[in-house]
Image 1 (cartoon, rainbow, N blue to C red):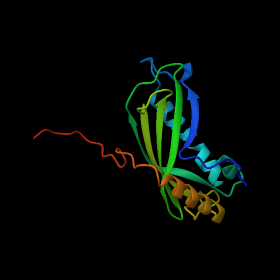
Image 2: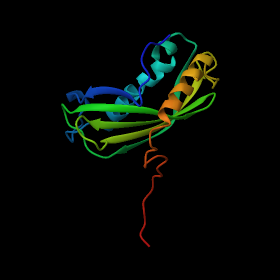
Image 3: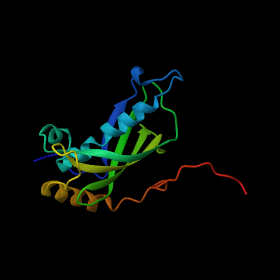
Length: 163
């Protein structure tokens, strides 16, 4: 049983490391995804479907789609805070929203919306979440329902044309 407390939203902190930089001198796109991936770990751990669950061989959660919005560049040594909230779930899927902040700033440096599927590691097919995980997800969803919906949720990518 996980003893981590229910956070609204869940929080994780990182520091931009020199190895995360690209030739532009700022955090490379791949490390934004990595930071968001690690930033969602507390949610999955709390619900009992984190990496320890994956290591058990029963199942895992796979990303089926995501969208990252890069709003401000991040530089070496920047202290980061990643927040993760549950937007919705059903018996096999969950929808999350993450924001990455430079510590001390109110506006996110990046946002991440993702849909995850629960998968059997034996069949490599989707399967329902364990009952205990579904109960925890329901608790998280109820707690996170009080948070305002992000303005960028479901953002559509495309070139905006005038006229």
